[in-house]
Length: 213
Ligand code: URA
Image 1 (spheres, helix red, strand yellow):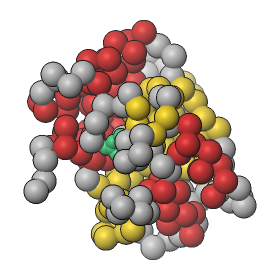
Image 2 (cartoon, protein in one colour):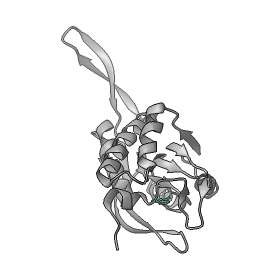
Image 3 (cartoon, protein in one colour):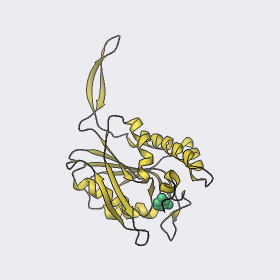
Image 4 (cartoon, helix red, strand yellow):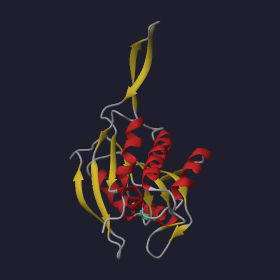
């Protein structure tokens, strides 16, 4: 597994406002969108392309286009939805599948409650959107889900990551024969006893969409 922490002043600037508890939901959504587009630029460095030829107004020339099968973008519901627009802005022809996963707040284990994905993901590059890589349980389960269906290249885009989550992913995916890359805006200090990232930004779903009672 490769972990890529983006080092860019604009990313740091947007992330600082995102973390601030005074930032309201509309601003939080806009900043998430902008941040994801910046992360996606780096995360798609290995996206597969194939040769094509076109004609400019001046002459024929060679170029590239996204290879088929098209990449698949997979937001993990609910908070991953807040990252979808920013991602597909960069990859407008990608297909989108949905994975609903919820974390049990006592055991911190993830379970799948919804999925809308092709049965066969053979040869697909998948871009998983999950804002908070905290314990790593949700992301590990999502990655297994996709590779069990044949995905052969996984990139997870996370706003924030915790060292504990990255260590767990390394451990749980050690036997996986598929390249996995994590792209994140920051590697934070640690998790607290409730499994929240410290300093973090709080509950990403609540900050995007409000608290569900
Ligand atoms: N999920 C969140 O939304 N925030 C955290 O800090 C950890 C998990």
